[in-house]
Image 1 (cartoon, rainbow, N blue to C red):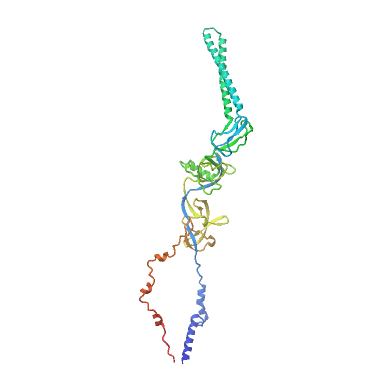
Image 2 (tube, helix red, strand yellow):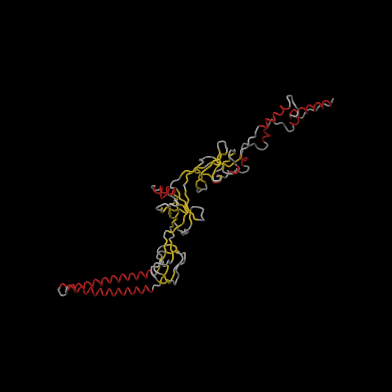
Length: 440
């Protein structure tokens, strides 16, 4: 009897198991058993949204800059030439020295000029003596003429002699002044303040007046920066310059070849009177202060010319811009966080490192800023908002801060202590233990 009961119970349990797992055919054939499985397999799985760093395009008031290349020029550039002929006796400077106006640079042998000066001075004294004698004769002739003691012809001769002697004195004075100038020119002096070049003529060489270049001299502060401006920028700048008070406010910045920041500020000095027909550009000259003397004529310079008024522009980080052959694009999100391909036209790079978007994107639109290679158009993303300036995600709270700030959390052991309905230890196992089966 006991064996029959065990067999019956085992068979019933096995049948129930086969029915639950679908291994036992039911009325209606095996097709009915297969339908639930087919329905489950046919339902497509929804792809999970990929996390992506997203930021909104910024809108700021910026100064529109145009960048050009140019060269530095000295405001005054002088070729020092001798004004008298002679032999160079001394050179009073070293190459690259800063000199002041009137400082002696070269000395030409002054002995011939000193002799000429003395000769002119002696000639002047002789002319003055003859002039004094003829003056006395002319004065006596005037008295005698009044007494009818001399003829009119004799009087005229005395008067003419006096006038000639007086003219000879004036000529003597001019010759003396010229000799003095020759002596002065023998000392070749700096005509301007500036930096002197190397001496092209050394001691012992003979030079001719006005021919040989002794050295060059260039002013230092301020300096000019000459650059070529395109026609469109010229028209914009010209309107600003002609507007009342706008030309003086137009900033001009400069950076040298080894400088990354435009830290030098200048001003527009002049425009050329015509555009070049070959290049379509206009030569512009800007002026920059050079108190430290670092700006040397001939250096390459990068010039940035800003607008007189600020404009509102859309800005994004350069890392958010992708390259598709010759086009630039961004991945913009719609209201469902689905990625869309958006071609854009780029503008200038601002001082804070953000790129101006001239066309294709509006302020406030959300774009993907990191991991563009892992994203494709049409994909849905889970946006993680980051600031556009830094692209750095927000800092996570320190470890344990969440649990420490959770004041509503019950203390350890409180849940079990307050649960009055919980059965005592061991009660669950006692209640669920099945009664012993009587054995026959």
